[in-house]
Image: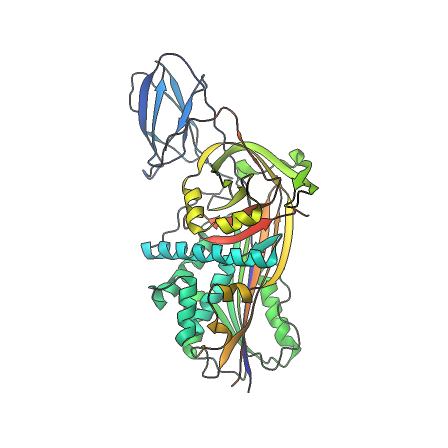
Length: 495
């Protein structure tokens, strides 16, 4: 008798925008003042701007939170950092000024985010996952081309559930492709549990939900350990249904709609095929507004040119603001970071340099280069232009997964689900994202169908320009862990 196993995933997310501003000025005779700037927990703060008031001179703290600045006698220094209260301190006779930056209030009732507490091994796992995320996005982008939106987190959770049902060479292949060699089964599952729980709690102002379910044909027998691992580590709802009735598909679709704020209303068609034995579904919903000081003014949005890869110009609604942002640039790219809610989540927008196109940037950008750019971002004044956009995708992940080395899942190796032979038939993802002046909303549905038979810087006077008026990338991440929820490329903004 033929058996079938299916995994489906849903996600919704929102993007946000953040800003920063720096200024510098100059004056006459000077002496050196230095110090270190920390937060309330005595952690050094890199990228704090120190402005000599009344002049055009300034600097920023280095990675250790240290700074040094030539100042005149009786000068006053102004310390500015995104999300913190600006402080003015008279130098007087001091040669060393150490400053503790105090976080300013967010929206009423919103507390600043606290870092998610991961172990060293879990932090290493997060980096490994991001490495796989960039490799997958390179493959998906080559396959899908323009306006591609992909959720690595959605796929990771789906493959995590599938991993627990795998066995033999198939399990080994999953581990090697995901970069999990050296991690025990407990470490792998505990990481999914920790990340899922922590993402729900890190920002009360963000609407985020993560839910998993297993639906199986009432005449099919899944192994108890596979089901129990799903319940323990993925908080999975498990239900047996009579797949021969129309109500079965309706029940599964209603669950998905409820978990994704009605954004995904159908993932199972009726009638369910006779050889379909099981659906594994992960639903992730994420929606948030830009952090208060970084919301775009809708009155400043205006029609502007967007130049596509083929050099054709298109009129788009371009949002605009000039503010303080975490910023980085090199000969290959420039990027800015935009915060959500209580600053736990953020979006990083990445533009290729003038001598690169979007496809070259995607192939260039791996996890090491991404991490280097994120680590070297510092706050400065940015003139930002970002188009409103909305994209929707529906694509197969079979070939991208195969190209990265996960071939065995398509031929068998799932003895930890059932003693009957099983294999993966299709892996798909359906995604949506919309970005506007208030924030963004996004979701992804990943489905796996398993079938079976039987340094210091001089602060610039003028803001740097970051005009997303040509194809660009954007990523949504949780900042303290670095976990990437979404990666997208916008080749042609549409609304």
